[in-house]
Image 1: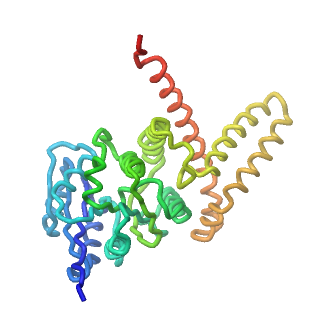
Image 2 (image 1 turned 90 degrees about the vertical axis):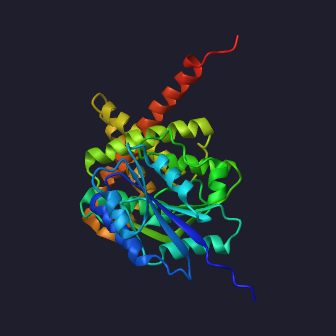
Image 3 (image 1 turned 60 degrees about the vertical axis):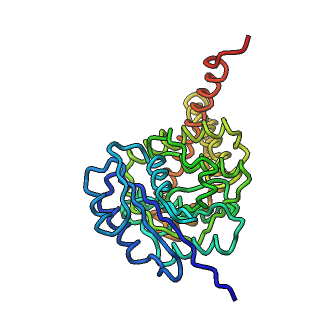
Length: 342
């Protein structure tokens, strides 16, 4: 009987001044990488303009370290690492996550067991590293979104995502025009799908997110680096009908309800009956998203779930605002800024 050799997985980690989270990431890799008889691995760290010694720390760990003089963003860094990679599987993880004991072996097994699989993504676990409320809320919501998503995924995820190297380069790699952590992974996923490739969401492949979110950092990242560019991408590539992850029909209905409630509350200043309409719509919004709040309750208790509701509704608000601004910008670009043929 012919025994297949173990797969070769290149783990690519982009980092820009990773701090203690990156140190934890390296320690988890050191502790939980599978043995060579199970999976052949290499770790490639791309120090993206680091000034805090993250590159030296990675060298001490034993990783192959690539350096850039100035920060170019995670898309460029991941591509640099992929060019150096020798493995047939490129496994991208973020510098602020730690892997679980079986993460790498499980990801490798996905590709061994399914030769037609182009890419696979995992999920955050339900125990985020940062203890403050906003970090717990945001990362648990991300976990919920992936755990309730379709296994036939509609996009890619750079925090815990693997792809066959030849397919990655045939598709063009990450778009390096994204100079900040943004939607470069989503955009790659759309190109993979457009090329006819299959992406699997593996809900049992987990990493722990260590990032600490604060109100300003969260809203800036969510609005400017995700919602706005994602809206533009959706309009350009006509993905508005996708019913998965952050684009579920329930989310779209919730966005409409949030703005209708806001309008009704404003109208109640002039017509008191509008307040009853706002209350009825708020109840509908609560019921539509009841499963989310049940999830928060099951994980962190009643006080946490109640505190999460206004943040979740705020999420619908800035998503809707980003869509409106993105739609206006897209319309103006198409109808006024692009020269029309004569």
